[in-house]
Amino acid sequence: MPSLTGTPADLITYMREKIRTHDYEPMGRISEIAIAPSRHWNPDPGDPLVMKWGRLMRFRNQWLPLAQTFDRTVLLAPAPMMDKSGRIGLPDLPDPTWRPDPWTEEETAGTAVRPIEKDMARMVPQTLEARADRGPSGGLAKPEGTNFLVFRPVINIVYQPERDRQLVAQMWKIEAGYDPATDTEMTLLVDPSTGETLFYGGRYDIVANEG
Image 1 (cartoon, rainbow, N blue to C red):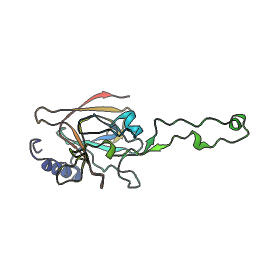
Image 2 (cartoon, helix red, strand yellow):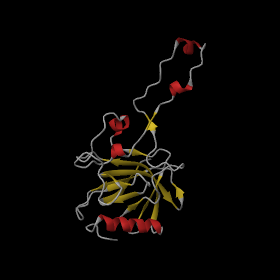
Image 3 (cartoon, one colour):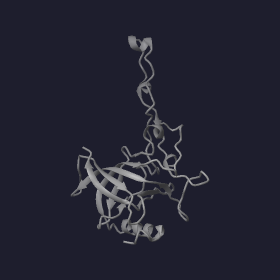
Image 4 (cartoon, one colour):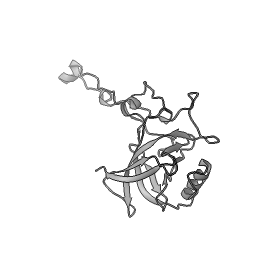
C-alpha cells in the first residue's frame, strides 16, 4: 500500500481502487462510529443528539458495510453512506429529550381514545455537518481539492461481524488510535454529495466482544 507519509490523494486513490476491484476482506456491518471531541469541532447546543452523545454516529437500521485490506492495515467502507431510498447521510433518531404527553382525564377514564402520536418519540435529524470538523474561519473543513467532510479522531467502531458470509449475533468493537509511526490519527471522510466514505490514517485493533 502507499505510505501514510505520502499524500492523502495517494491513499484515497489506493482505497478507491481496492473498493472498485473488490480487493478486500469483508468484516461485517457498522452499527456505530464514535468520534472524540477535538479543537476542530464546535458542538451545537441546540442539537439534542449532540448534547446527549456528542459526535457519535448511530446507523440504527441503516447499516454501513465494513471491510479491510488483506494486509489488515486499512479499513474500508465498500458502499456509500445512504439508505435504501438513496438518501445520503445518517438516519434520523428519536429525540432523547422527548417525553410523552400527559394523559387527559378522558383518556384515563377510557371515554376518549388516546392518539398514538402522543406516545411516539419525535425524530431528530442526525446530520453529518453537526459532527464534522470546522476550519479556522468556522466553516466546514474539507481537504484541499475534495468535497469530503472530516471527522477526527475516530476512537472506536461497533460492528456486527461477518463469518463465512453469515452475520454473527454478537457485536464487536474496533478501537482506533494515533499511529506514532506515521504521525496520523484515524480520520473519517464522508462526501455529503455521494455518500462515499473512507477511513484515513491511524491504527486499529479488534479488542472486545460487545455481546
